[in-house]
Image (cartoon, rainbow, N blue to C red; front, side, top):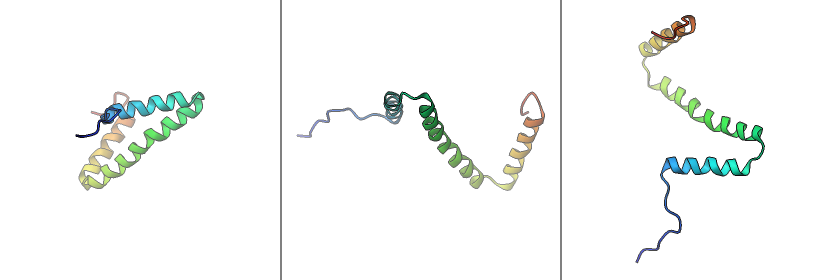
Length: 79
């Protein structure tokens, strides 16, 4: 007969939520909490941008750069 686990397995979203709740309980200092959250959030963005550049062709990179330049100069955003 299989042994029963005392805790149910969490899906990734529930596990992430539980981690954030745990950090929130541990940290009373708001500055320290913000620093940890900033570091956690920046990891995905750094990896995503590098991966995107590796998978894009030269023409796609050029088009993305043109769109970004237009968005910077146009007050209404990209078109």
